[in-house]
Image (cartoon, rainbow, N blue to C red; front, side, top):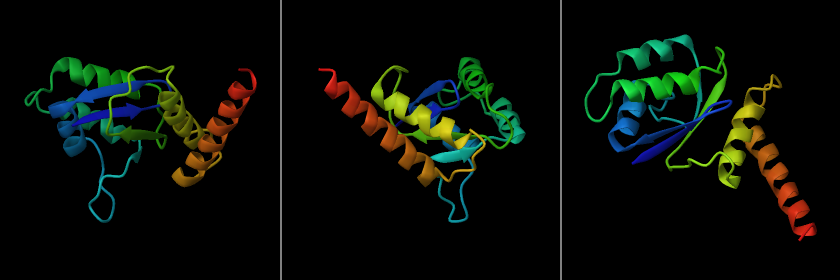
Length: 134
């Protein structure tokens, strides 16, 4: 399993065991004990990253990449996890996910569903504009 974690400015790519360890040690399950794709950043996450055991594919480099990815987040900001490898920040899919995170963190107190609806509408508008210029 792979995992792409989208923050305000970065995409953290985690492969196989790294992704599994991240999901078990870093992410917070909801009241149904399920891990939701949209998570909230808090200072406890940094402690959890530092405390991740160096085993099952997790290295100091893994921790460093996660910490660098979280560097732009403030307490209460959201980040998004998706079970795919999306490395190209310029791809349409990456821009869509980065936009959702940006909309969640812009101070307008949107829900994840509201941010996704706005991002989808904006992506559709961009598609229409690009087709008009063809």
